[in-house]
Image 1 (cartoon, rainbow, N blue to C red):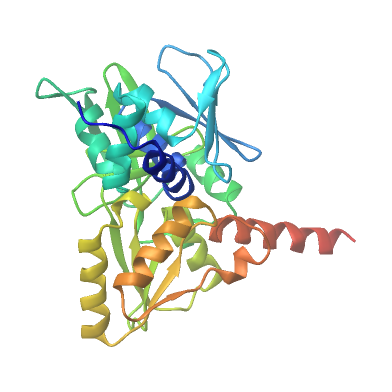
Image 2: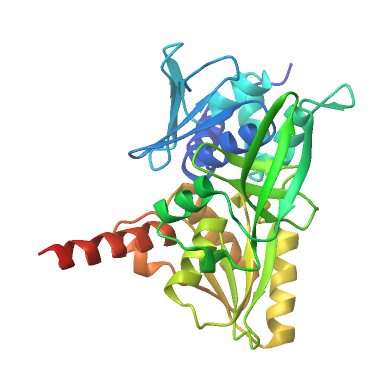
Amino acid sequence: MAKVNYAQLTEQASKIKAEVSLLDYFFKLEGLGDLRFDGKKGKEYFFGFHHQKTGSISVKEKDNLWYDHAKGEGGDIIKAVQLFENKTFVEAINRLDKNTDILADAYEAFYKKNGETEYNVSITKVLDTVQHPALLNYLRSRGLEIRDIAKAGKEVHWTNGKDNFFAIGFENKNGGYAVRSKLYKGNLNGGGISSFTIGANPQSIKMFEGSMDFSSYRSLNPKESFYAIVLNSTGNLTQKLSLNVNDKSIEKNVPVHLYFDNGVGGNKATEKALEFIKLAEDKSSFYREKGLGDVNDFLVHQKENSISQIKR
């Protein structure tokens, strides 16, 4: 048996805890059917098992920690991988240290069992324009209007077993959808990036972590024309994608603007993009400097301040 180098192991563990996004990991588990996302309360994201009426697992993005209130246990990303992938502490560290894009491995670990998918999703209807009042209200709760998702967001209906669902969906490159509603956030028929061309004369490539940030940028800059790339998860920002974006920016002779979240996962994604994309620029200062999490937080904050000014 190989001797364990505990000093090296401790160093690896510290690096992983600081750089690998726990929230991305939980959203991947949710998107693959292992957990259910129950929404955000304050600064915490809540997830639950399907047998629970109310999600008991809270995730604090900035602290990169989780806690299961029902079981009275929690921890960091390493503890999560140990639990959900049935690995030892050493095994979890070795895998995370060698593959920071943990979401790709999570797909193999959770999405397939004995050659069959864990869940039975069937998309039943896709509308080019979002019409359902609940979805329109959800958009407004995020500071958005229907024009902000035009030609990108669709109304997607699907079944999972005997249950029916609907949400706003953004089609990805693999033919699936990143779907969002007040009650649900995940992926249908596989994950992947989404890309859109906004306007007739794009002057830049803009990369966003999620669809709500992409839509929020459109709301803030309605006349701007650009190529948009929505990661739908920082785990999708691979070296291959970064190099492809780099080639496109050189070919089109346009800069690449980054708008990733103000958190562990977003910071790591920004570093990776800056490393591989020659013309990349971090453009997140307008929300980071205010201590806000992302573009959507900035939009909502701006609108709330405007309403406050009007009331005075």
